[in-house]
Length: 229
Image (tube, rainbow, N blue to C red; front, side):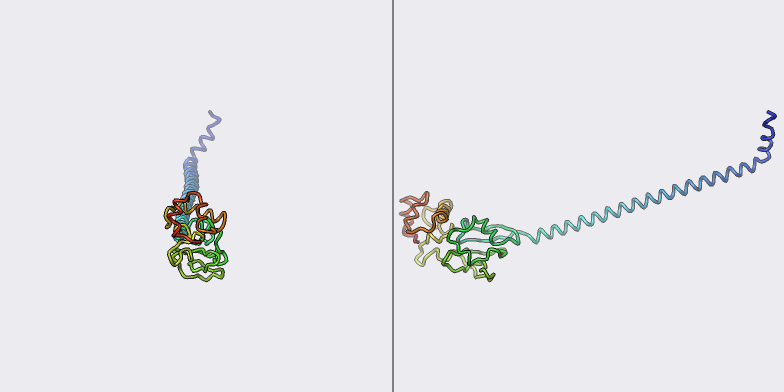
């Protein structure tokens, strides 16, 4: 016990100094701790703000892309083209803006054997409400389709030369719609007539139409006075 008395006496004499030093050390530790904690808090706030700004920017980009997509859809809306003449399936076809004439022809089943492609520009872009009549060889192209040079003709309401002045239907030139005006000829039979012309060429005589499947003597008797070649 005597051994520790000098130390106890020294501590007693310097008690106030030691207490003051301890307080100073505690204050220093507190200042350092809170300074570091505050810095981390500031960094967390900055990180959160950065993430919020990035999210807002991404949302803005998404809205812009959606708007651009809607504008693009509106620019490429439906286009309706009425095609007739020397195509296998005349009719009105819905395509998109920018479609070329050769694509509409493909939709219509392709050209028949009588089609005169020298009078049309298959690379032209079709327009909404356009009427296109593919002319037969020897006929003049008066349809809304363009000539090879790109000059559009005037609109025609039918296949030129398919109906004669006395009202007879030329079975070598008539399209599906005109063929269906004949007695006993519906859409299926009209398609068979077009298929026959595609496979064997033009009819030599009106009676040759009986070579088409589905057209017999009785049907021919009903139509013979209404057709020609």
